Image (tube, rainbow, N blue to C red):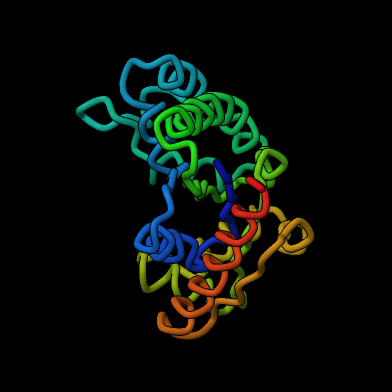
Length: 205
C-alpha cells in the first residue's frame, strides 16, 4: 500500500489530475464525495450541521444545500471554522476506513487521496508522498467564473479563505503548475505517476 495526497488551490485542476491518475491505475479516494456521504440526511454529521446552521440550509428533500452553506461560511471565517470542526472528523474517519478496506483487498494498491484540505486537516502527514497543484490567481478566478458561474467577488472570497498556497507548496513532494493545457497536465501527471510507482517499489524492497 502506497498512499499519496493530492491537493492544491481551488480551481487548480486537482480533480482533473485525479481523473488522470485513476486512468493510469491508481485507486482514488475523493474527499469531496466522502463529505457528501457523511452529510446525508439524518446522519450524525447532518444532525450536527443543521443544529448549528439551521434547517434553512436544507433543500426540500432534506439534503444540505451546499451552495447556500458555502455562501454562509465563505463570508464568515468563524462559521467556516465551526463547520470544519463538525465535518472534518467524520470525513477523516471515513477516508481512513476506505484506505483500510483497499489495503485489505489490494495490499499493493497505489491510493491517491484527492482532498482540497489535505494540509489543513493534517492528513498530509499520513501520506507517503504529497502532490500539490497550483495555478495563478487570475487563472483560478477565470476558471471559477466560467466553470461555476461565480462572480469575481465570490471567486476572490473562495481563494482568500484558503490556506496560503505557499504553506501547501512547502509540504509538496511533487508540484504541478497548472496554468496550461490539459495535454500538459496529462504529461506531467504521467511522469509523476511513473515516479510514484518507483517510490512504491523501493518502499516494498
